Length: 217
Image (spheres, rainbow, N blue to C red):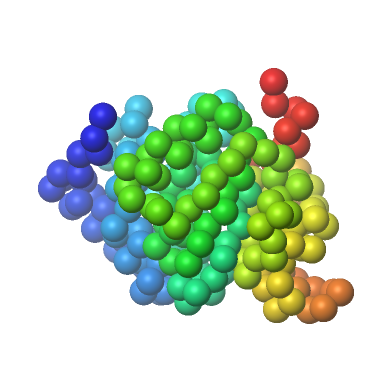
């Protein structure tokens, strides 16, 4: 079914961008939010729910992140449009679609096959031709396509997986929520510096846990 993006959806999206702009000033990120029909990624929600600045369930125990967090994480990646980005957790595909407007190439890994297939179909319909997706274990990343200029995680591991840091270029940036479900989680930004890294905390967050492929039946 074709995505319908009518005037009411566009009005609500403009209002959402205004709300998000209170905390994120990156113009490229705000433009990507404005141009991406979030309601297509939450088809069971009505338009008001789709454009509320709140997370929403997408099935299989997963959620689509609230738009202000998507914007914050996208801005934290500091994308110019030339980068190759690895996304761990395709989920609904919404963050992926935003990244496709901000980076040169996006490689996205999803552990749940059904979500991966649904997201791929939406991304194709939206014309996101610079996105590659696959079903896999996010803890392993996408080693044969590495190195990446940026890495972003949309689910929370207990600590940043070493394999993902190793798949960053020297000077690259990784943004990830870290911590256990039900406990304090922190949004971290890591800059790789040779064999080490500089890490800064961007604030508290709540994300679903990042699970290895062996946990998914």
